[in-house]
Image 1 (cartoon, helix red, strand yellow):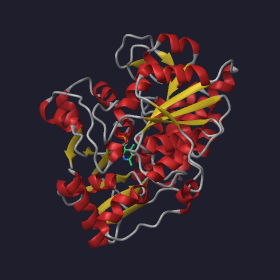
Image 2 (cartoon, rainbow, N blue to C red):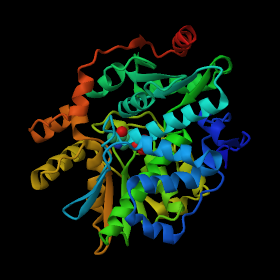
Image 3 (cartoon, protein in one colour):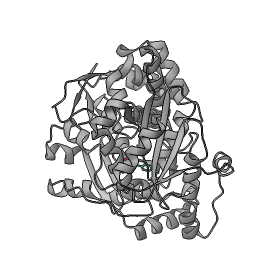
Length: 436
Ligand SMILES: *Cc1c(COP(=O)(O)O)cnc(C)c1O
């Protein structure tokens, strides 16, 4: 399979190059030139399959022709080696909790899958130099990527995060690991971190000297594995006889997760409609309403993993629907919630159902409530984070301290190590040049 750039100014790449580079030379995002379809019989048989089997079916359809099938199966198994997420229902609204991975983030699957794919291609190529993974994070991405890539030979990871703007638990998850993981504490905002990473990819001199790639959801093997979840959720709903008229709601930031859902639908998964749930960072909703896309600096909210003012996967969504605004709005609707609304939802769902949402999942839940589902329509939202990751926030809202899962407690015992840096590119470049 070849991968073309959404900007169409760079030549198509094979899978290996798309993975190694992350972003195309023309700054576009890679798209597979074909989206393989699963036939209806396969879709209908998913309900009798395990999560691992479902994921393997999807992965083979995308990547099977570009690598040994057995190696791919092993990567899938390894990427998903934790508790299988289970669909639940609260007051007629279905949820799939995607926080059973090692860092309790849905990004664990994509991060672990990407780390192993990168490792596979490095081995196959016979490595001559280290691959340097750069990742900007507002919290969750950094922890998932750092843990996913920990100890993988010939790969070094640099996590850039805004000083004082990630939760203490999240910070522990990527500053205490050591080995091939380096945390860079940037004196600036998340946008500054993202700008530094982008500047590094655009710097010819740096790219000549270092093999750089991105582990943000611009990388095809970071976002695509997230489609496994949608097939898995569908299989469970089908088993319950609830998959007939399905609306899926996705709390969104960079829109990698939602894009994976749109890919799943294009592969044949019968999802009737998608909703992108946003916080006050609502450039996507504005695009849906006006047809005009105006990226702007992000504003800080309670759901900080969705504080994105210029969602990178927007380019993929436009490409998928031929830049046709009418088609996009038919497939996806949007909504935005303020911090006050998020807090009210967390509180209300806790009070009435004793179900504790995190601030991101709260946007998803509320969007389905506001949609007023019709009889026979199933509404599913993805609960993207464990509430304990936003302990300060949810404790304040409910007045009851959330228990910290053992997996998270372990991280908090480690010793924090990070390198303080300014937000100027020269300083960052100098740092990379001296340590690599
Ligand atoms: C990353 C993240 C999101 C947003 O996902 P995108 O793929 O960037 O849209 C939502 N919620 C949580 C908890 C996240 O960590």
